[in-house]
Amino acid sequence: MGLGKEFTKGIVAENPLFRLLLGMCPSLAITTSVANALGMGMAFTAVLLASNIVISALRKVIPDSVRIPSYIVIIATFVTMIEMLMHAFAPALFKSLGIFIPLIVVNCIILGRAEAFANKNSVAPSIMDALGMGVGFTLALVVVSTFREVLGTGAFLGHSLGNLSANSALIFILPPGAFITLGCVLGFLNMLQNRRKAS
Amino acid sequence: MRSIVKLGIFLLIVAGFAGFAISYVNGITDPIIDNQMEQNKLASFAEVYPGADDVKDESSAYIDQTTDPLITSVNIAYKDGSPAGVIYSITPNGYGGKIEMLAGFDIETKKVTAIKILAHTETPGLGAKAPESFFVDRFKDKDTTVPLEVVKQEPADGNKILAITASTITSKAVVSGVNAAREHFANNF
Image (tube, rainbow over all chains, first blue to last red; front, side):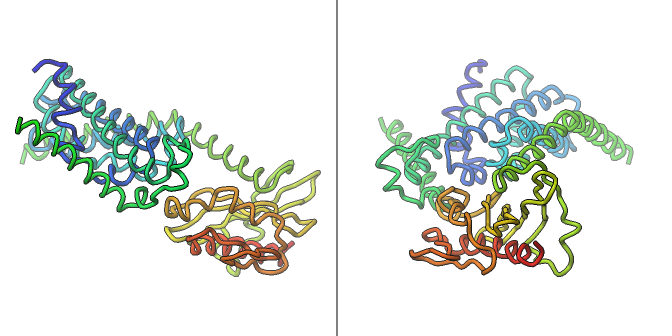
C-alpha cells in the first residue's frame, strides 16, 4: 500500500469513529460545539502522531511481552505534555475540553493504532497512518458537532444563525442528543454503503 | 527469572525517559501557567470590584471554623491604603457539581458590587447560562443587610433575584453562595 493510501484510509474506509466505532466516549461527550471538536481533534492528532512515530521507531526494541505497558507509558507521556502545553498556550480550549484531554490516554484509537499499525510498520507509513486517522477522527467529530451545535443552539462556531437560535432543540446538546446524532449519522453512512454494494 | 528482571529494567528505562521528558516540558510551561492563573485571578478580582489599587488575600484573618464552608477565601481590596471592598471566593453546590465564583462587596455602601462565575459544570443551555451578564447583573447593587431570595417571576425588586428559566437549582445555588458571603460581610465589615 502506498503512503497516500495509508493517509486516506483513515478518512473514509477505516474512519475511526464512523467505521471502526472507536473512541466513542470522548466523541459523545465533547461534540457539543464545533470549536471543541476541532480542539479535541487537534490534540488527538498530535498525540497519535507522536506516539505512532515513537512506537514504530522502537518496534524492534520493545519486548513483545511488555509492549502494552510501554505503549501506555509512551502515550500517557505525550498526553501529559500536550495537556501542559495547551494549558500554557491555549487556556480557553484547555478549559472547555477539561477532563477529556487526560482521557486521551485511554482513547482506544491511539492504543489501537499502536497495536495494529505502528507496531508492524516503519516510521514513514506510521506518520501517514496517524495523520489520516487524526484527520478522519477530527472530521467525524466536526460532522457530529455541527449537527449538535446548529440544531441544539442555533449557532455555528459560536455565531448565531438568526431564526434558528430562537427555535433550537436543546436536546441535541444534552447527552441524549449525542446518541441520537451519532446514531443517525452512522445509519445514513450504512445506507450509503449498502446502496453502493447493491449497485 | 532473568527475563523478568530484564523486562522490569526495560520498563524502568521507558518510564525514566517519560519522566525526564515530562519534567522538561513542565519546566517550560509551569511558569507560564502560574503567571496566567495569577493574571486571571487579578482580572476577575477587578471585574467584581473595580478600581482597587491592591487586593490582598486575608483569608487567615477572617476564616475560622465558624465560617460558612462555602466561603473559600476572603480578599480585601484597598483604595488609597485603606480597605474599600471585600472579594469572596465561594463554591456553592449547583446542579452538576461545585460552582466556583467570586462576589464583591463595597464596605462604604454595604452593597454587592458584582459577582462572577469562574468555573461550573451546569447543564449546557440551561444552568450553564448562569455566568452570562443577564443573570449575574441581577445581583448588582443588592443590599447586604437582608438575605437574597430566589423568585421565579417578576417583580424581582428589593432583595429578590429572578431565577434563570428552567434552572432554579443553579439559580438557588448561586444565590446561596452570595448569601453566605453576604452574611459574613454583614458580620465582619
